[in-house]
Image (cartoon, rainbow, N blue to C red):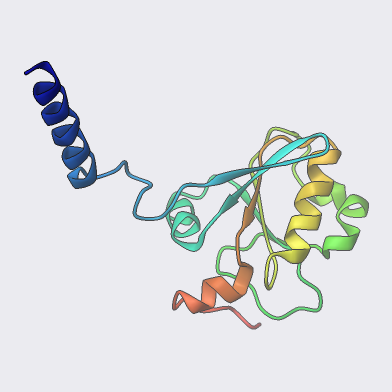
Length: 143
């Protein structure tokens, strides 16, 4: 009898777990931490970035070269391979939130890793870059 009750409870828990709605990030995925030498940065997907842009509280940097367009609300364009030479343009507060992107996310990952190595603690990267942004139906500013 004890086994039947326990089995029934386990079955009910599994069924309920499969039917419940997740947290607020579930429909968008969950930002993921990428560990690199010196710390970590955070990868976000397009829906997460769209939500972040609705209440923008960060410096938004396009690091792609050559120029292929900007996502609206971009603050700066700094080539990924000159990020260190352009620190004067980036917030001096190493805890300030900085979101990077490029065309596919290869260059922005390199730039994110370099910023982390330099002591920046709140660095974010758009996973999939402008390609993912456009694939989600969003435009680029080409000016």
